[in-house]
Length: 124
Length: 124
Image (cartoon, rainbow over all chains, first blue to last red; front, top):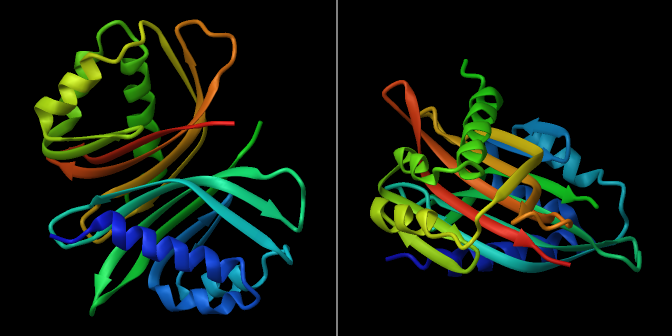
């Protein structure tokens, strides 16, 4: 039995460490040609558009902090649905913003890729 | 091409209307024997445990308001991943709580059932 929460935690830890680091281009290894990403109100489909978006985020410094992470098996195939809620500091701002992000991870040769990625800030 | 956002919006509207109404037992029609639900820190697997949980929520009056709803196709099969963020008024409280909820909807004979349901309140 796969440890779904363990896999999802390991993935999310790596993902945010890379996103918060100096070279975000490393994130593109987890997307594929048929991956979809929603970032706030914008949608991106395919590896190149997603790479381009992640590479052009208008923030020089991000700092994610996971508050909750839940993971379910999403079918027979070993896929995993992950829901994360957390806080995000942007460009050294004092006040963190809340966010929620959902990933759909698909097993692929001993690792996982992201089929679906939906990110939303939580206002108010 | 299926209108994924349209299906997800119709589903979520019905789901919260039923959950906010006087008879929550109607929700059980969208779960199956292999469905999984996370409600805050508790996990439930299977129709009976989910029915029991939804039927015994310790709130007499709920009022959900959707702020954002995003939906992606989750594979070849017509399944849909939905991420909702919104506000929730509990028992007439003046201050709404923020929440985030993820559904994985699976097509089934002209309708959809919920394979995965993850609900989290957002604190702070």
